[in-house]
Image (tube, rainbow, N blue to C red; front, side, top):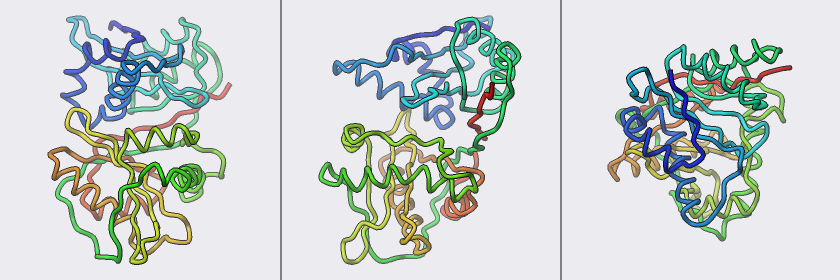
Length: 295
């Protein structure tokens, strides 16, 4: 197996684009981030020197896997797509040889587990599962029960509320999944980052009959014909009223109406969100995990 570490996301997309397109749903995170970062670099914005993009090739030169290390929050975990088992083991060894400090690693199973196991074999410690996630794709949309209100696009004027809900999202998601608050795998951007998100992503509120925002749903622009829904957040005092089902259903309908496929991630430890999305017609595609390397 050949592992190619690249610093330029445009070069990465040129090398791995056909592979990403052929597995467009599973590749959604890497494809979205690569395209977004390439656009930012073209606009003059720099990326951190720690960032890399990975292309995995087999003995014939065909691309058989991909990954990246672009997380903007500590401990900057790599994110891996599916790849052959021996490639995942070789990657763990390569990361150790490169001298990279890896305290967490995320992505598709079993690649992340094999890579993490090889890393701790070299550097010591143990691997713990921080979070099990599951990627789903929408089949036939099943309309939920109608509720009052409608979807409204969030604008830059809404940045303070969006920022507050972004910051609450991680801790609330942990609590709903039975994890201690503060042990989060969701890092909220700062206010400037949220303003940028309002420009580069589709962020909507569900507003009730009085026009008050009661829920937030986001969606990334399509990459290779697939748009990923998220984050999805309802403040505690508004839960249990059907806002999330209504908003996700309408956002998903719009994605499909524009000719794209819709997908989203769930935390397997959160029965509420998993039940909501299954009822809307989302079906499991692949299991992933956020792993912690404990020294």
